[in-house]
Length: 208
Image (cartoon, rainbow, N blue to C red):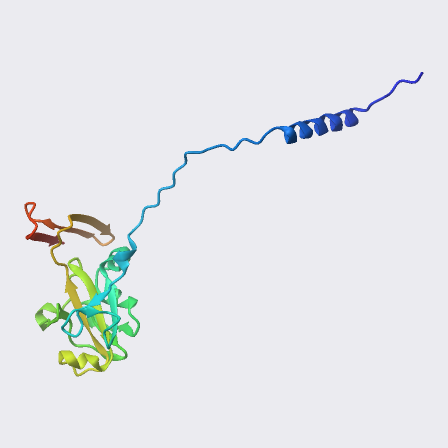
């Protein structure tokens, strides 16, 4: 009587097939995990501006019968902007000019060179025109087109109006320190909130 010979390869295949069959018959148990994903970022409303002061009255930006571009404070913070020329790169139709060797914020709007900047709707004098500070800016409004004549401007290209920060009843403290080459050192601080737990008085402290 001849014996049955089984090769090692055949035995291995039989064992493997048995293991697959057993694993297929075993019940599948779902594993519960407690992993939590936390996403940190800036609120979307920090990038949205619904109202504008262009036209000397506060109105909804969609109702303004003018071409208005508003650059909010969060854009200035995200891009680490330190002068007005860099901020205006976010506005269509605005281009930087020579600026007297970089000592002035010099730009053109729709091809027309501007000669004035407004702050809260008031024309800045030539003495305060050189490099206006940006650490106290709430937003920058760019009025494009001939509607700038409403501000007494003859240039049809447009004008720039800077809105400064105002006190808020929501407590907020912000600080930043920047350093770089050529001995660059710059610290900024901004704090606002109710004054002595008051519901009618608020303060704003801004320094650079």
